[in-house]
Image (cartoon, rainbow, N blue to C red; front, side, top):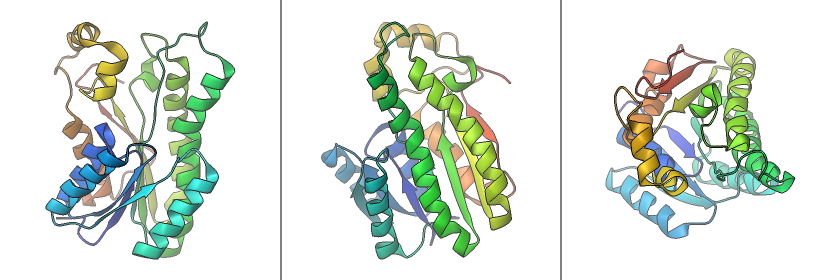
Length: 249
């Protein structure tokens, strides 16, 4: 229970990786702010599971790509918890499009949802963390940010690659303030979104190229919990690859 007494905001926590990350942090004792954009029912399920673990959870609806929504969300956090110890920038989406199919509005939407949200939430979190001289910011990137996407998704890959530069730069600013900033880059993880965007046959084909096989949501959650806990105290500006050996740097 190394995170007992800590408060964590997980964006996009209603399902998939976000839900798994929120539960992994709660298993270590953290109270959780469950952010969601559109799926209230799934957010309630995540909250219920956190409370079963003995931790406090609140739900905050916000489109984290919108500055007004982020401002409102952080006002709620400060009112309910007075502090924030951990921010996990997980919210994201994609569309199965190559460069010829991608229109500017598609590009802008993915950039706003996946990357502008990281800037907005990190900026708001830093305002709190600099005052308390401590904090952890963990950005959920992807293997496609390192090696490129296989089936189009040029906008998605661009946002995930952009996270690396953002993480390294913010880490330099945040270190004197007692705040660490890191990335987790998952590989092929068995999520609902993976099967929705690729299909059973494509996923099976992709999994054949992974030395350790298809990853689980919990694998990502445990990596985040490590960075949020005592083990991550002296790690900043880094990326943990959770990809089963699919991509080796």
